[in-house]
Structures are given as structure tokens and as C-alpha cells.
Image (cartoon, rainbow, N blue to C red; front, side, top):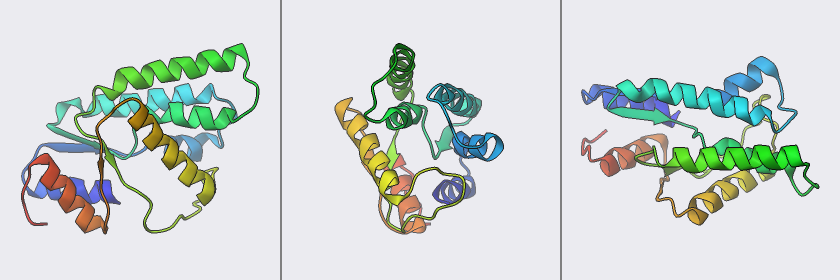
Length: 171
């Protein structure tokens, strides 16, 4: 994956880097499909814990962000009429997202370029995955969050990120 490739390149460059993979994937493998928006709290807390553990590194890499459970929470509720409890949970997830987003030094959006593989863990199909991607970009734009869009092969993406970070090493 891109994060693993980037991590290895940073370590080869002698940088103090660490990474954490997406918590929700392990959550889904372990506990099964998410059935309630309240489970997005658990996803948030798991991701937050992983990211907090990266604070000892100069470069902390992750392929997920703590603001994403808010996006998925909105998708889970869809267009249905929301209960007071669901509204409060969504509001809480939004507040957490807005608070945490300030902690990221750099956000990279990596568009889908290689197709969508149904891995047996994710609940969405390719169409919904693209809609989630659009919602993530919409959230970042609406909240005026700076991000970089990185395209190309894994190697090309890694090189672009290293350059943006200021590490001008040919990978």
C-alpha cells in the first residue's frame, strides 16, 4: 500500500517515521458490519488511539483520519428521518472531526485510480465508495481544510508526498 511504501522510503531516508493502518478495517474484521451510527464512536476512538500513539514520531502516517467516522455516520443515516439520538451522535462526531482536523499537518487525498476491489470487509460497493470520496472532499472544502491531491502509481504518489513534505530524495 501507499502508506507502507512511504513509510519504508522515509525510514531508508533516516527519518523518524511511524504509521498506523486504518482502524475501521480491523474493527469490521473483528466485530462484523456496523449496524448503528453509535459504532462510529468506537471507530473514532480506535483511530484516535492509533494516531495518538504516533506522537513520538517526527512523521506520523495514517491511511485514515479521525474525521472520517463523521462522513460515514452521515452515509449510514442517509435521507431517513433522524432520531434525536442520531442527531446528537452526528453532532458529536462533527465536533470531534472539527477539533481533530487541526491536528493534521498535512492531508493527502488519493483518488481511486486502480478500480475498486470488494474485499469482503467493506459494506459499500464502488458507487457508494465514490460517493463517500466525494463527501470527504466536500467536507474538506466546506471546512476550508487544505489538502493535496496525489495521483499516479504507488511509487509516483510516494515521490510526490516526499517532495511536498520537503524530502527531495529520488525514490
